[in-house]
Length: 189
Figure 1: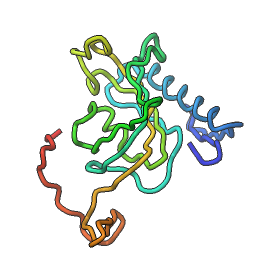
Figure 2: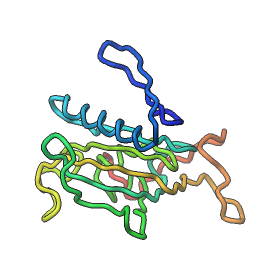
Figure 3: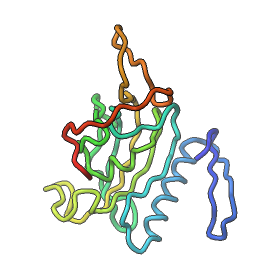
């Protein structure tokens, strides 16, 4: 995905292609279909498939950063989008989460790494990275592959220190060393 509704990709002969779309929606729809095609053409989906729809701006998010996201989740059925199992898009509240805290399924956290504020991404998450064999009663059948479209609306990067006004002083690209991660309830995986 490139600015101004461009997409570039390589085909199976390693030839580079660029396409310009008439609208952002057309570019996003194409990117979604590419992601679904990747999923359908892989014999076994054993990791999270990520496809950027909109790049966003600023710094990519990492574990420990706090985010507010809008999302919609579908079941992956019959080689494409099935029914919606969860969404907050038409609700007043965004989902708040700290990356790495385990508030959402493992594949969702993994798939959001590196996203930027204003970015949108399509994720296809295999059962082992989602709800596995247990599923979610009444919403997600056992062993379901999930599709999520996530948009990062707000980002609060991990603070490296704060000034008297409470504003963040350091940032990740500053020369100051990063703090050593502490064990505040994060599991080893």
